[in-house]
Image (tube, rainbow, N blue to C red):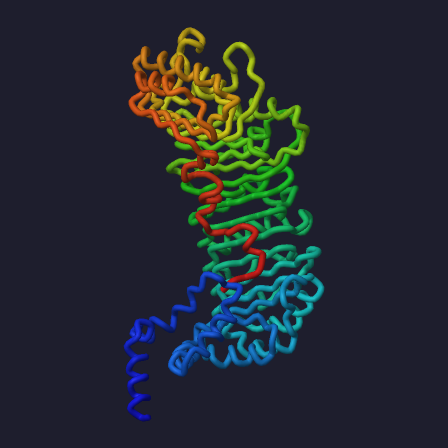
Length: 509
């Protein structure tokens, strides 16, 4: 019997999973893909065998996430976490398991170990909880998130006596507080939203920025003052800023007039509009010498799909504008044309890549002025991507035979990517004429890529294109060409630092 037990023990020892070093095995649960079941999976692992139970229970960082929904679970996690920083989450929304006050009270003797704290739910209950219990210093706290899900509410006096020198990330939604806080020397991320404009002032925001010299990511969503109480000459430098995201109605330059935005910063402005006039030049800050990031724009993405979106990028930074259209569809062609023409307000002569999505407009018999005038300024343009657009205006503008006085538009153009639907098959004739005209003018294109959901482009036309273009690719695909690495879907403007709405949803460790 003893021999059989020894054989089984040796067999278990030499299985692949048991040959993984203990210190490596112990950290595997920290990388679960499904964070919603992380606690349940962790408990399951401790019941696999005696060896695994000893390994996982003895690894403190696995037991630091406290949702305060069960008294015994909270007590066990606190014991097993030993001296590791704690991640405390208090949720009161109906879709989540509500926290228990008695379970939360078990965490209070360990405030000095709080590494992150998230409070989500109705303002009344959370403000009472904060005022009653959260006073003492928290020397390890790096992340603080408070989201009042119903109405904006004040937390005065501020929690932790405003003394959070270790804080790296601060996210406040619906929280009225007296900015700035005392010690923000290590803060890198500030997300502030849903606060009435009369409850925050420009001076408070400027003071806040001065107290946070390491600030890199800032989002102000519906939390901007509409009047200015700061002296005209006051300008605050943000030397480490990487992205500034502003959402307000309307977008205005009151705050931006007082910020020195460094080269390399990505600036995002969001708004809605319902007028015929293009909002791009009207809603952008005007004559702001503080904005140094629009001096050289090398790539432009302009999308008209459901809402007007503009993003400008370059080696010295970028500007992204999002405007939600709320007017009638009859005005959309006018808005499209004027928004495209608005690119002329920027320094686009160095632009090398232009992506247009969902551009649709009525086409006059002569060359369309909006498209022609915009492309005429892009002498350095090398790549043009038209995704789900009405392609004819762009093809016509690039045709020397159609341009006024035979003007050669975009002389450096090398590559065109077109997404063509069958109803636009007529644009192939214009494409043939355009490439022939450019080839005759000595500006032969190197690449044309045609993407269509159905096969309708005749093989003879593809062969004819190849007589004037070095490389022609024709492929079938139902997917509109992507924004090629610089669009909204890929980087969402802000270096992956936000995660957007997930920032305020169910927190995962």
